[in-house]
Length: 167
Ligand code: SF4
Image 1: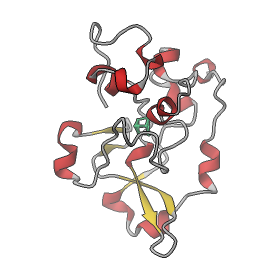
Image 2: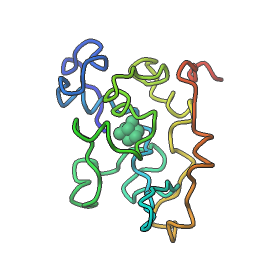
Image 3: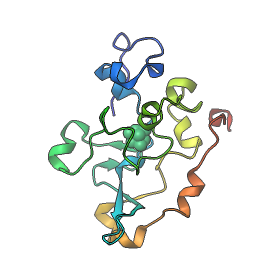
Image 4: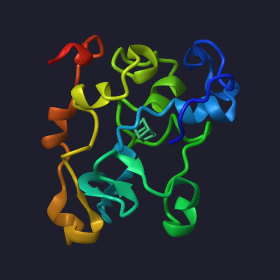
């Protein structure tokens, strides 16, 4: 997602309704966790979605950022574009996703960089995928990489934690 440009974003825009955000504000809402860029596996019989630790080939595993964000839909046609309409209804988005939280009328967590002032806080909060996933280019069958629900529990964090205080 994009970086925040001074002048394009209004004061405390992240407290405003999603539908009132401009493009810069919308892009800046992303915490950069990278969790939405992990592959999911759907059970053909039940429709249940299982998470994996396999990242899209475009995800930069060192930064958890898309390596070609402007062209992602052309390169990966099934890449899901978050919108005001779907942000609150995509079940596989993490509970911590800023778009999901705001779509539900919830505040951003204290570790979000817009609140804490630290981009790295998403890693210290245990929410970033950096260091925890593999690329689809080397992963092999997705079914061998299912991590939900057991391993995802380790990703849950306290909303009031102050990860930037960790040394
Ligand atoms: S899950 Fe949400 S907050 Fe995390 S990278 Fe994706 S869009 Fe951004």
